[in-house]
Length: 43
Image 1 (cartoon, one colour):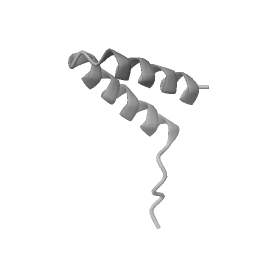
Image 2 (cartoon, helix red, strand yellow):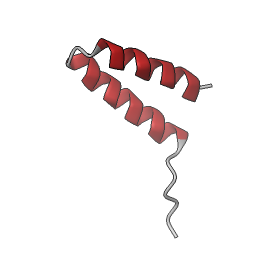
Image 3 (cartoon, helix red, strand yellow):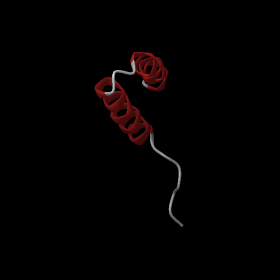
Image 4 (cartoon, one colour):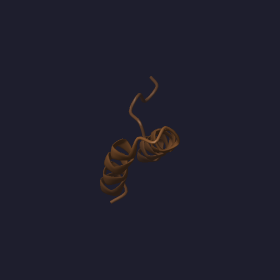
């Protein structure tokens, strides 16, 4: 059976991708929130 849980690396990669899209779209609040989440995840 395949493991369906995301690894920490997968989660970080997904958040970084979302952050880049948000930066491109000028969504500064979203970028700030994602950066806070990334800080917590990387601990």
